[in-house]
Length: 487
Image (cartoon, rainbow, N blue to C red):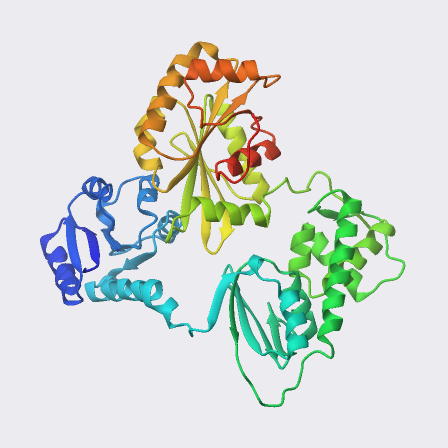
């Protein structure tokens, strides 16, 4: 079956030249003179690529999110840098100007995208294994490699960077991690738990020169560092504090370690960011921070300590549950019974990851990066007629919905009942009812809500404060159907 291209173009000559190039390369191509016509067709068909004439695009970027799961190209004569960036942030893959917007160039880009998606993965050697790093114990492998004299190469990909490790006859002969080499690189790799691993065992009879004197020694050092890091975190009562330098104090015994770590603290880096950016190993970084705290050179900045955030395991769980094959974006709706409730909840989610909030047409938008180029968007909007009008534009790649119901607004329950029933009938997605302004979530309150709002028995009902990240996190993970929610 031939691959399909959708083309948004009203000019006959421009459309014909693109059609000719597409047909020559074996594509089927369908032309739409209006963006609205293209959106209607997407409800029942899924093309392999979409090509858009800039002049025919809608005025708001929100409408482009409907097509963000497709490989999309915009072509134009000239476009400003800010506008180009806005299109990229809306999910457009390429924006081509003038001489770069020729039909043959457009088709070559579509061909290359198809190659990367369909053919390139199959070109890996048959004995190469790919899996999430969290499912692979590098420590256990190195132990086994030493005992069994194994040889293997591995690469780790995580959000645009690459780490490499090579073991020959049970000895590490090459290690590279974000600019670090040898022992430092190996220790940092052992501490890293995210990303995708490409792993291949091989036979090698040649003599090798190891980069480390003792693999066992490195493993023991890693375990010691991990233990000291956990003890340090336990004493701080925080997983990711921010430190600040106390003015008017001086170091008693100054070392290069002190100056290096303090330079990171001066830029108000959190602990996790310090551990990521420092050239020191984890143990030396922790020891330096402990020494600076002991000398009262630094202190924990409670005002700047980051909010609670989604853990790596949380992000992996959401990535697995919310994203279909080929998706790089998914969306969760936060439907508030008031403007304040949805805005507060979006604000807490944004703060948890240090992300920005975009507000447009009554919609609050933020996102949580999940790794592997995937981003989970949270769209906050008030329950009302405006939402009904915007829903067709907001429900592309919709993965779940949280309804915030104000228990104090019982007089408006009839409208909420109508809206929730209509929404659940049209969109078969996970949903949760979060009840705000309720002092105690008793069985009687839950029963009353289910009856008045006609909530189906499979939809959880729970008490929720839009300002409490822990409750918000539980609610969102409950949408994945992997975290039980106790009403």
